[in-house]
Image 1 (tube, rainbow, N blue to C red):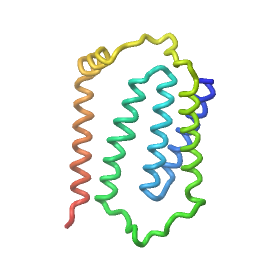
Image 2: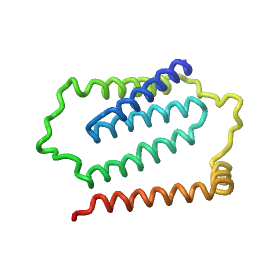
Image 3: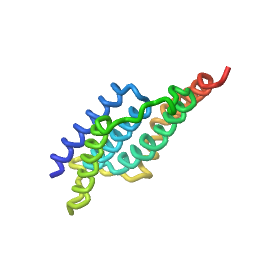
Image 4: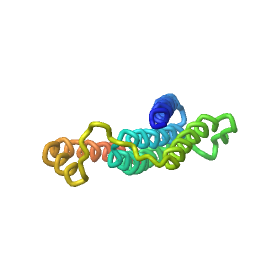
Length: 161
């Protein structure tokens, strides 16, 4: 059961990511990317990494997507009052992918078995935090600075002249 869910969610993540890359409308691309992130979070949970799954939902599907939406709204990429409302044919990929992810989550919740991490050692949150900030502290700081530079660049691009 877990292996079938894994392959289904992996396919959903790949398809949603391809749709996110090829979509011309920026807000639709973000919706596909959020679908991909949620599918990836369930894949991480199936692999026995619930902490990484929670990080995927909170950090990527939450914070990063809000940042993307903020930048899109700031850059004013289009005028919604002039846009044509999407027809039912435009919604089917998102509905199908969302239904597959929701069905996989329901099937996982209905099964009484908790996925085992296999042969990987299980570490707690405290050990994870220590390893992250002691061994990779400089990398975490560099990434945070890159995010700050991206935010400053977005503000510079979005300011009115």
